[in-house]
Each structure stands twice: as C-alpha cells, then as structure tokens.
Length: 185
View (cartoon, rainbow, N blue to C red):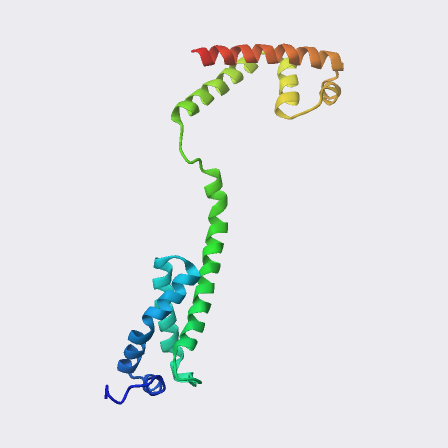
C-alpha cells in the first residue's frame, strides 16, 4: 500500500477514508514546514510546537471534507497554521492585558530595609499627629490628608484663613522634626 500512496491527492483520499497510515505519511511530509511557518508567525519555539500539533489535529478533523485543489496539501495546512497562530497571538495578548495591571504593581525587588524605614516614618507621623490639639488634628486631616485649600478648611472649621495657615505651618515643622529624628535613629 505504501507504494501506491505517492502523491498528496491519493494520501488525502485515503486519510479522508480514515487511514491513519496515510495521515501519518502526510504528517511526516509536512510537520517541519508547518512548524517553521508557526515559528515565523509566533517567534517562540514552544508556541510553534503547540500550534503545529493543533494544525494537524484540525487537519485530521476536517480532512474528510477537503477537496484538494492543487498537488500539495501544504497550502491548506499553512492556512490552518496561520489561523491557529492568530488564535494563539490573540490569547497571548488577552493574557498580557489581564496580567499587566498585576505585573505593573509588583516591584522588581523588595527592599525590606526601605519598608522598615517607611513604616517607622509613618508611625512617627501618626504619633506626632495623635499628640496634636483637636483643632490642629482637624487642620492636618483636612489640608494634608484630604487636600483642602486653606480657605475651604477654614470655612469647614469656622476659623480664619490665617489660623489654618499658621497652625499648619507649625504642624508641618513639628511632623518634619519627628520624621528627621526617626531617620537618624
């Protein structure tokens, strides 16, 4: 039977009838060209191997309906390969977009020393703010934490613009001193 299966048309006809031998012969003939098409489209050997296998799975599923127009099966396999490669590229892009926000938020390295320093600085700021008079805490919260302008904070608290400005200046000096002392320690 191997001698009579010499051209693609005959091999396709036998494979369409369910001959695994004929399909294996086609596979052996075209697996390398299909792989290199996939590799050129995807630029990744692992993806190219996967797409090559997917191409031949699709070919096996559809070969019974194939009407071979030329003398070579390669153009049909190349078309399947291009479609499978396009699917792979779309999936890769979907995964990249889905994972990108997570990857962008993760630092490349974790600086434990800097995290300890940052935590100590935050603790120093919170301790200093906790020791402020109630009006000063409200001024700090409105102007620093919530971003209020002096006029808006003054209106909210029922004090003058000058009171907010002067107290906030003293609060900032006090907090800056506490942070500096923490950094020295």
